[in-house]
Every structure is written in structure tokens, then in C-alpha cells.
Amino acid sequence: MSLNVTIEGIQEAQAACNRALAAVRPRGALGEAVRWGIAEGHRYAVAITHVDTGALRASHRTAFQEKRNAALGRMFIAADSVNPRGQRPSVYGPVEHDRGGGHAFYARTQRERGQHILRAMADIVIREL
Image (cartoon, rainbow, N blue to C red; front, side, top):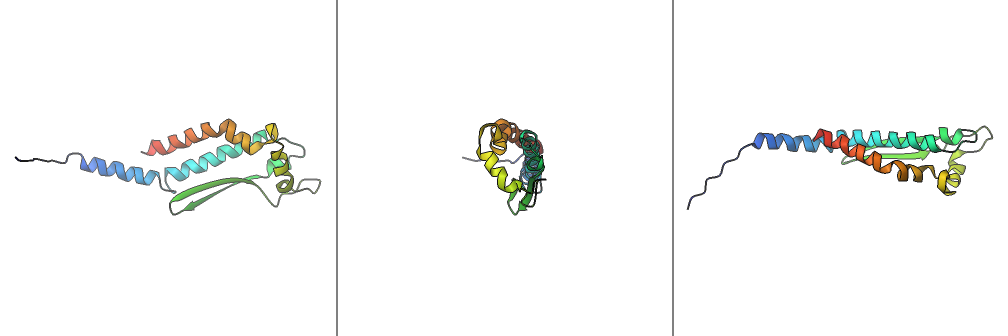
């Protein structure tokens, strides 16, 4: 019995693997997707935040961090913001959010736009594959 084995397409397969590895690095498409996703979530949260003085709406911030094997995005209320009445959105913002329903700007963002954002983020990564 004899066995004859050949390898065809090895260079193409290696190139595809290299593209996949680059896409899922924090500085690759994965990082691009997380940056886009956190920005899109921020835009939506800002748009749906109820307004009295406007300070809470203006206090939403985002941060992006690259770690060795991760791209991390977060959204939060700036601790140093103060409204015209001398109140801090970082103090009353969570109280407003905890009222629930239409007041829950971050929960609503996740519920109402989360799937759309995740699909678009996946598309950014898949495009690079």
C-alpha cells in the first residue's frame, strides 16, 4: 500500500490565517469595532438622556483601552461635571437611570440598540477576514 499526499494552497491558507490573526488584535479590526461600538452606544445614550439642564447629557464619556489581547470600551458619567445648579451629574445620573423605563439611558441603549451595534461590530471584524 502506498500513500501519496500533496499540499496545495498552503500559502493561501497561511495568508488567511495571518489576516484572521491581525483582525482580532486590539490594534486591528477588533479595536476598530470596539471603538465604533462604544461611539455608537454613546451617541444613542446621549440622544435618549432626559434633559433638565443638559449637564447629564453632556457628561456622558467614553474610554477605550488596548491591552495585550483585548480591546476594552466603556461608557460612564464624568465625575468632574457640574450642572448650573452646582449638582454633579455623576451623583444624580445613576439615580435618574435607576428610575428605570425611559430614564434608564444605558439600559435602554443596550436593550434598544445593543444587537444592532454588536452586528455592526461583527461586520467590521468579518470584513477583515
